[in-house]
Length: 307
Image (cartoon, rainbow, N blue to C red; front, side, top):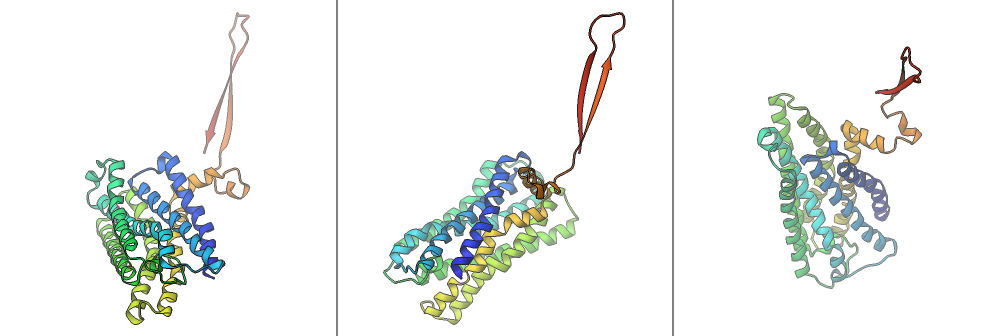
């Protein structure tokens, strides 16, 4: 059943993740600091989903690896999973900066700004990835994914750090909503981003936050190395797959700009044409007649498109 979830969410989730990346990089009107951070988040989610396919393969064919065999495969997953967690935090820091310091925010150069926001996640991920390489053993694993591939003590610390970051994300969202309430509606750009983030963060709390909280609770009540603890921890994957897959569908729902860009990509498909803006083409023909002249009549045709 876990393998089915992984394959299903890879299809549904990466359809959306790759579209967010493509639309953001190819449509000028969608580019911006917040959009590039969302694009980076979608890239991290796409990579995490692809890493889950290794686990699906091993489950389908009944392959059990030892930790020293599994961890080198999953070490990259540890990095990208860590980066997507911190990226969610940075997206909230970004919108908080936009709300509190709008004038200064607009003076930041996009490239260096986005890079600085992504560096903390990379450092966080590399610390645990290297730490995991330093403590591999030959234990046979029933699943091959980051929480199991890391030895229990490191895995517990990694998940606890994720839980702390996720709690900060939730607290920041509450702060932003309160600020927006007391400051009024604010600028249209800020409102659009906040509307989208409200839904994304709600799903985030339900999925990734639930997974890290569940892992923490399991390790409090069960022995970290017990078969039951390992089994319950691995089956938290359903919640994790949701967070890796939801962004595109939330954005299509909450963002007119992305929705219009997506529809424009596939406007030749009949089922999407009804969502595209209709156009009326009017042809205006003017004739110029020159008297007392043998020159031919010039006709000028002008097309005007009315949306």
